[in-house]
Each structure stands twice: as C-alpha cells, then as structure tokens.
Picture 1 (tube, rainbow, N blue to C red):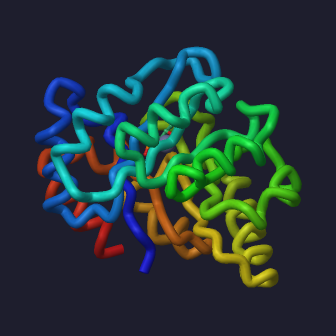
Picture 2: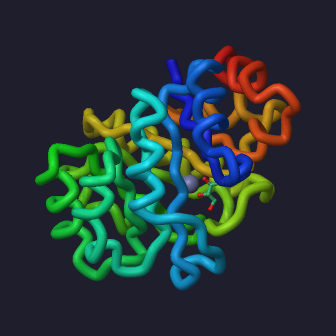
Picture 3: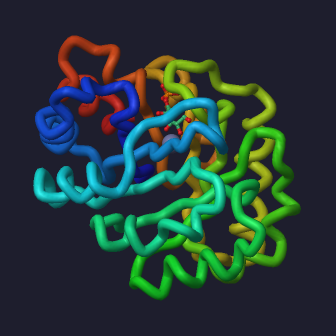
Length: 215
Ligand code: DX5
Ligand code: ZN
C-alpha cells in the first residue's frame, strides 16, 4: 500500500490546524511540511516554531521537507519541533553524510531529496545510510506545477536499484500528482506520494483525501 503524505503548501495558512485535521480525517498517513527559505528555492514558507505549534494538533507523523540552504544549521530545531522524517536536499548541503547522521542521531528517519535534474548517481555512496529518497517531480518552490515527464524513468530506475540491492529505503515523489495521474505515478514504484494542490483545490478536502487514499 502506497502511503499518502498530503502537503499543506496549498492549504489555507490562516487555519492550518483545521486543515491538518481534515487531512487526518481523510486518512493521511503523514503530513508533508514544506519548509522554504527564499534562497535554495524562490519562495518562503514557515519554520520550526510553526511546526512545533502544529505538532499538538494531530498524532499523524510529520514528513518535513527542508528546501533550505545548508540545512545542517537547523536539524536540531526541526527535530525538537516534532518532525518524524526530515528530508534534506542533496544540492543544499556540502556534507550530506554528516547531516544525514545528525538527523538519525535524534531517532528520526532521514531522507534525501533530489531536484529533477540531479542524477541518481549522486546517491551512490549515501544509499546505505538513508531511510527515504524523495524524487522531486517538479522544480521545488511552488505548488500547482505539472509533473515532469522524465521523472517516470527516474522513479522506475530508483525502484530497480532499491529492489536489486534489497535496500530498506522508501521512495517518495513530490509534485504534480493529481487525481487523474496519481495512480500511474504510484505504479512507477512509489512507497509514498505527496499531493498538495490536488487535495486543497477540492471543496471537500476530507473527501478528496479519501479519494487519493483509495488510489
Ligand atoms: C514543492 C513542494 C511540494 C508541493 C507539491 O516545492 O515540495 O510538496 O506542495 O505541490 P503540488 O502537489 O501542488 O505539486
Ligand atoms: Zn515537498
């Protein structure tokens, strides 16, 4: 069963607690939290203090996606805020292995995200140390963009590598998944799918979350 990690990026930021409760009622497996710094990506969202506040809203685990430059500066803050998974970008840190080890030192699951143009080869020497690979299927920074076609090959190839080497790593895809293409994308080999605008564009967010769960 593929897990659903709805992103609150397209939710109403004025009522995040209510929005998260809707996702919980719809059966979300995780809540995907997109942290952006205006440097690594051309957009700014929220940081650890907001996540810490939201932590009291739900027991659904938090899947924190850090789109920030040099994330090693803030791992402790996000761990203390209540993250369950922390995913950092390969392109954003010089010492990827060190930062991954720091995430795990807090007892959390550690993920590495790759921008669409970043090769899977960049993961070769980190695969033994991570719990999750986040394949960006849009350029990070904004919700509501279209799935980049060549990411089909990337997900399938990642699936093959993980299966061949019998690695215990989840594959998550992020961006451009809607009701009409999510099933196909899941079948490329995902363990976990992020959906933002595809859920929050709906009038009934609970119902729409359930529809994605049923896929
Ligand atoms: C994009 C974010 C995504 C975003 C996906 O930079 O990482 O998590 O919320 O949004 P949709 O599903 O609208 O493409
Ligand atoms: Zn994300």
